[in-house]
Image 1 (cartoon, rainbow, N blue to C red):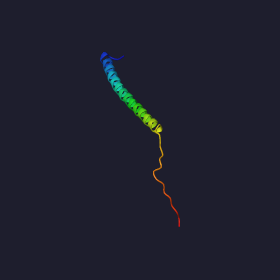
Image 2 (image 1 turned 45 degrees about the horizontal axis):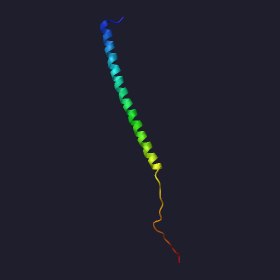
Image 3 (image 1 turned 180 degrees about the vertical axis):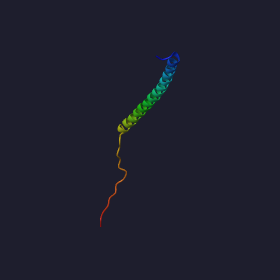
Image 4 (image 1 turned 120 degrees about the horizontal axis):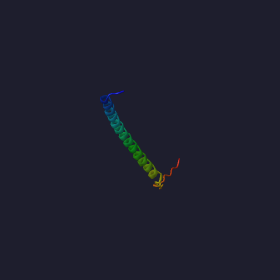
Length: 67
């Protein structure tokens, strides 16, 4: 059986580990949000490119004759 002091130390260590875990979760979630935002931006850019209309206009014509 653990002494009261040992129990307190274990609880303090557990609390510190939970704080570290929560900080890492926060970093992970922020990275996931950044990735999702970038993905959405890329998809929007792609959609705009696909919706572009191309026009072809004849600027000039060349005529050649071989002699």
